[in-house]
Image (cartoon, rainbow, N blue to C red; front, top):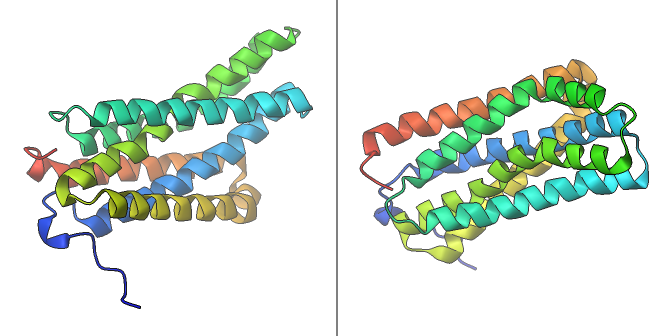
Length: 213
């Protein structure tokens, strides 16, 4: 069996693939750290009953799904710099991550004694925006790679692979290392730092190529 061939490397004009794959792996790591910590934080505020768990998981899935649709819609606009939009999304996720636990605590105080519908909607809203941004990242990068390589299948498969690999590493690190050593606040700061590094790296790599999309 032949080894996998690189994705039409001779045709790549955008950000180098090793760099792109590395930052997207890091993005996947931070995303799963957020998911585990935010789920714990929200369930601490609103209880770990079936309804609370369902609402938190639903919020994550809906946010990711709608974000994917939004990213796909943006990627169809040929004039947009897609990697720059990816960088902005990562920046937004990181900034939200830094302040998220404080926001969750404020929301918990606000909804003390509120009904199940009110608390459920607020829990939904608390994770909707960052998961919307997370969901947009994959279609943005896929469209960028397709524009630069002309290969849809390999662009999707490689980016999905590295992001899923990052997610698996993030779940392991959050549960096995970070939460025990740094707690929720420290672990979130690490995840946010990863997002900011991704955003800055992509921006720096994009600036010399800003005429490209």
